[in-house]
Amino acid sequence: MSDYPYIDLHTHSETIPQHVVAIRNVFYGDARDYKFKEDRFYSVGLHPWFIEHGLGSLNQKLLESFCSKSYVLAVGEAGLDTTIDQLQDIQIDIFELQLKLAQKLNKPIIIHNVRSASYFQALLKKADLKVPLIFHGYNLNEEITAEFLKKNCYFSFGDYLFRSNYNAVRVLPMIPDNRIFFETDDSDETIDKIYAAAAAIRKTTVEELKRVTVVSFKECFFPDVK
Image: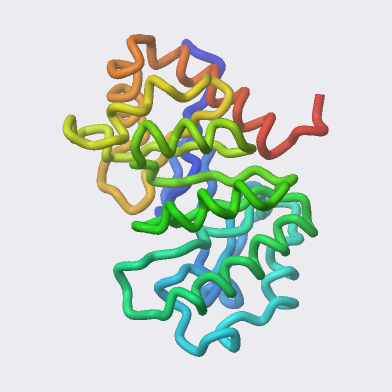
């Protein structure tokens, strides 16, 4: 039996199997009343879907109080979504406030990116970011992926791996072992099945993927722990 757990980088599920280490996403609006457990891992951020009052949607000190907890490993998910009605300028302002917080706390930020790749391409070209950007639900093309690989970016793949015509399937083999994660997000698929699909695409074993994602997890979230 493998000594390595599955890593579920981003999930909305409250039910975490014993053989899985997961980062449970908590939306900023829910965090005040959420019952955090100190023996689990979380991320907290203001999702672009829930920006209801412009910059007034985010109390930065309150978010910092959540994200400063040792069991909150990342800020997010946060990012941009051009398919919703919320003005993109407001989304950018809110995202950049959260990115600034991630830099202050020296914690990764989990990125929600829907048809907004050009913004992140420009950001990574102009900014010297010290913290990892983790693109969750990754499904961008080879050219953009090659750009992101030059920067401090990680890539988390989910149920798009079951759709053979998606970018996720084509770019997965491009990703180095130490930049790769997998996730269930809000899917009904289990993390075991997502790893199995990824192993088939990368022509490796599930056990090897479990090993390399544990290494990625330590390097990304606990870089000072030897």
